[in-house]
Each structure stands twice: as C-alpha cells, then as structure tokens.
Length: 158
Image 1: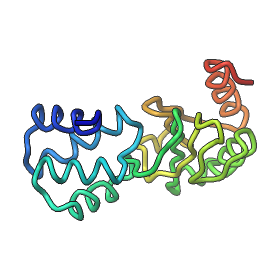
Image 2: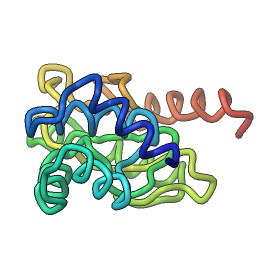
Image 3: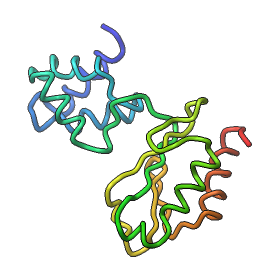
C-alpha cells in the first residue's frame, strides 16, 4: 500500500465512509499533499465506494480544493466588486509583477501559486487576499510587495 492509499484509508477510518465524509477527507488530503491528484480521487472513490465521477465533481465544485499541483504558498485574491472598486487590480498587477506569474500560474520554484477566488468575507476591509490560511486586508501595491518580500525572506529568497 502506497502512502496516498494509507493516508486515505486512515482518513476514511477517522471521518467515515459516507458521501458526507468526502469533503473533510479531501480537505485533509489537500492539507497533507497540497492538492488532490487524479490518483487520490480514484483511491478515495475506491475507499468510500463512491463513483470516481462523484468524487471529481465534488472536488472541482469547491474552489479551495486544488486539483492540480500548487505552490507552497497559495495566494488567493478576492474577485468581488467590493475588492475591485477598492483597487484589487493594482494589487493583482503588483503581485504578478513581483512573482513574474499570471493568475492560475505557479512560480517555477513551486513556492507561489496565484489564484482568484470568490468572496473571502472581508468586503469591509477590501481589497483582501489569503496566503494559505493567512488573511491580508486593506491591500495596496506597496503593502502587498512588503508581504511577499517577507514570504520570500522566510525561504531564503530575494
């Protein structure tokens, strides 16, 4: 049994083998593996005895379940009208310029992925973004450059 199979079996033992268990198991796999691969989806379907198409449909419905490899730090920019009106595009351009990637891409060193997301729940402090589970609000291009510079320093980058 490979490590993904063991992980999925342990998660199914913990959460149960029902359709309602899919989401918590998927979230735990993503937390451990950084994304939910096709292989993981097939193994999960087998373990909980649910069609693979149902597992895939559930995985792709939720924007926080990554189904392709992502960077160590996943940057999610809010794309609501509130964030757009408060300068989201300038913040996005600053991130793209600093990391040299576009929306939907990952840096070549696999450190950062840049994604857009629907409402993050911080409209009153727009524009907002998440880096993994860390919320950043009231962003400006300058503020976002400082935030990213700190993440780069954490990893010996500059």
